[in-house]
Image 1: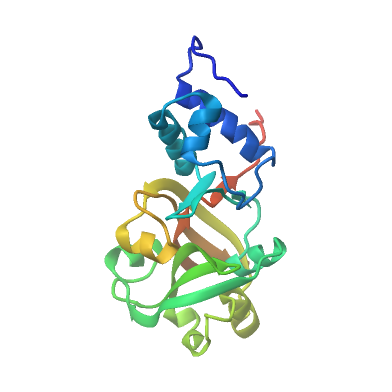
Image 2 (image 1 turned 180 degrees about the vertical axis):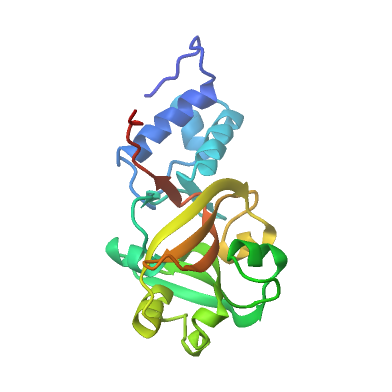
Length: 246
């Protein structure tokens, strides 16, 4: 029987959380395996139900476990490790991981740019832009909400395409000759809003990662502004840093 250390400086719920985390990250509990019930954990670790619930709540906030009403608690799939080295679209990235990408279009229209958006895209205020908002899915699971704005003058026929099935980057290259080669982006943590949580199938409060990106062609043309909301329980971003020279 597993015992926690009563005289340890770490609280009992933290010790329990780390014990369960070890099972999750080492693969002893695989994705979608069911965890023992709260009652079983109380008996196994000789702790109160409050201690067990605090440990499980922390693991759920970290995206390591999830609950199904009336079913129990289960191990989550490993987070998607998004590399920040190369510029690629969602469809291309999911395909490279062996997942089936899909999109649900929320908006596809032309409108006048707001003052803020016009500044971001270096356009005159009120210039016409194309708006493409989609929920991005992998193997049927919603992972992100992506809203793209592009200068209408650079791709006036873009809305003829069905972006529930087609890749935006593939269309831009194939139909318009634009090769997207460079981007500047920022990422910050936030809490999902009610509509975002509904679209991403999250239970509030839920962490999300907010990404904003400006994308350039190989000719240095600023072609795209992207605002994306990623599920915090399914994504992590990874970059490799080199020491500063000089």
